Image 1 (cartoon, helix red, strand yellow):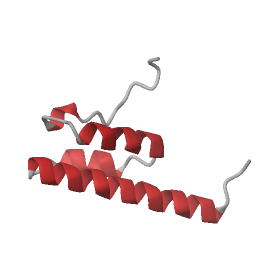
Image 2 (cartoon, one colour):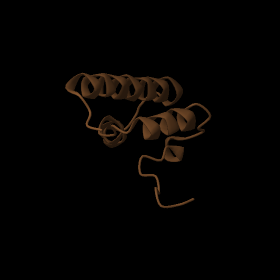
Image 3 (spheres, one colour):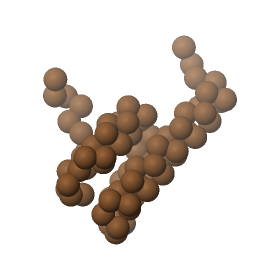
Image 4 (cartoon, one colour):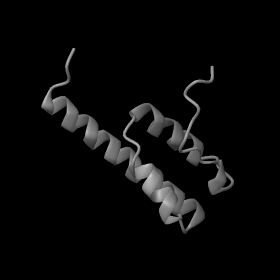
Length: 75
């Protein structure tokens, strides 16, 4: 079924909110977030992927643990 404009806008808002939350959490934990990582996160619009990043960010010991390019083919 096709997505309505309203549904699209709501999803976009959710994605932006999650992107902001991830970036804020990383800034609080690691102070400086490299611009390249910030851009990568800002370019992710898949809500499931953003949820995964949020889960990764909380216990991460370093920024290298944040996987902005997951392997969607692995089981």
